[in-house]
Amino acid sequence: MSFSSFLTDTRQRVERVLDSYLPADNSPAPELHAAMRYSLLGGGKRVRATLTYATANMIDCNLATVDPTAAAVEIIHAYSLIHDDLPAMDDDDLRRGKPSCHIAFGEATAVLAGDALQSLAFETLTHPCADLSGDQRCEMVAELAIAIGAAGMAAGQTIDLAASQLGLDLNALEQMHRLKTGALIQASCRLAAIAGGADKNTHQALDAYSANLGLCFQICDDILDVTASTDQLGKPSGSDDGRQMPTYVTLLGLNGAHAAAEHCSELALDSLTQFGPEADLLRELVKYQQQRTH
Amino acid sequence: MSFSSFLTDTRQRVERVLDSYLPADNSPAPELHAAMRYSLLGGGKRVRATLTYATANMIDCNLATVDPTAAAVEIIHAYSLIHDDLPAMDDDDLRRGKPSCHIAFGEATAVLAGDALQSLAFETLTHPCADLSGDQRCEMVAELAIAIGAAGMAAGQTIDLAASQLGLDLNALEQMHRLKTGALIQASCRLAAIAGGADKNTHQALDAYSANLGLCFQICDDILDVTASTDQLGKPSGSDDGRQMPTYVTLLGLNGAHAAAEHCSELALDSLTQFGPEADLLRELVKYQQQRTH
Image (cartoon, rainbow over all chains, first blue to last red; front, side, top):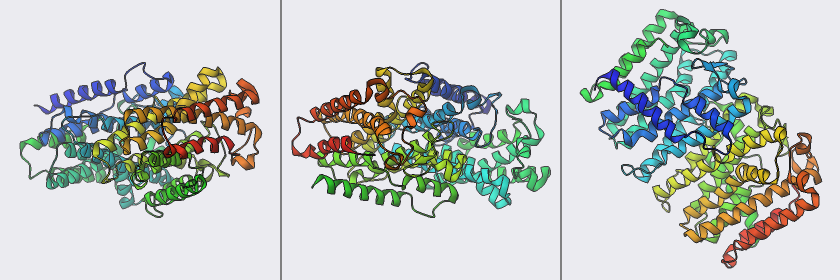
């Protein structure tokens, strides 16, 4: 399978899966339901689902087996964006080129849509599947819960919010990103590895891969925030600077940030050396995300 | 075991369990962690945990087996109170006699503390336990997720928020409460029934019991909101009236609300007629909550 057809196929695949898990017109609170669909199905790069499917592909696990996993990590990502955009948080009015959820539906509904999406992600992981034991599904629930909780994504967002006042040095910035975005990116691979029954060695390689890919992704985001237009990003460009947030660009300069991204890419690729062509999709993903323009 | 010693024992028990699941000084984001402990361990009646333990007691399931369950339903309850109290939601400054989470820690941290508590509840349910199969634990995760999601608690809160503008008739009010508080109360029994391997008949009886107990609980809350003092409630009394919310008291009058509570109590007790003394704790809980003063 070529990388570009893999990207197209898996994006379409996860859109179909997400739509089926959150069917239209099926809620006692239609406004809440509409807000959830608005934010979940409103496009996006589907990086996390793509990682899940690419990992499954590498370890020869059926893509159907990880459909709930791919959906769950995208559902969590959508919930986190809704809450991050709230006025009390990053106060962003624009997301994926559209009004943020709280602009479109009001703040209360946005809080609740995020909350309900989080629940939906966990429900999704419990779907019965002939290929997955109850213990495996439980382990996936636990991994996801830990990745996004008080020692993961939520902690990262807390640190991020304090950063505009406190400042962060490079180590602290990396720690923040490892929690805020890295933990869920890592879970996107790890859950697929659990589903596919990967051995310990493969788990470790994927952890190293995804940790470095996650950092690379974040550094590239910081670079794009100063080099791309609002139109390309679908959210206000230069928004980090407006909040005086420490970024890889403010700490390292544009050239330094490019070098750091390159370094993380190499580490991500290095972690896959023990694998053959079965890891090519994961390798291509590293290059792809370095070359993206939004 | 006497009912009062059961109440005391189970409250102490769940406090210990909750404290152990959220140990002090154990987070990369101490402020977030402090907010979670502040809201989770700040007292409360522990109605939901008590229901879980009383159900386990009835079906002869070890209390230790449902410790994670009792903790999970209380963690979800704490998260829902934090988010419900937010300025964009019910805008309540006082909770359990203390400043609400967003007053004490700021709005952003409160949103994130609620978010991280939700994740913690699901993580909690996955704890390995010799008495529970992976399939059972998964079923419990699924039940809880459905109870609190877009067809449950979150939907109920959405309907509640719209109610001050739209008004609700008695049927709509009941539907709102069945979702907003009833679904989690029902889950508190149902998860214990799953853990204890209860048969279908017992499940149905417990569903009927908890649905009616939940409504009775809500009607009594509405009554207390007009008859108890702020001091007794630990939150502003008369707050429903201040928001012009439809309540059982505004729709039925005080006497009518008392009669409705009595009716729900009877239905809850009726659903337990097939059981002997093993259901006495659940029976006592009905009377206890009708007699409470806060």
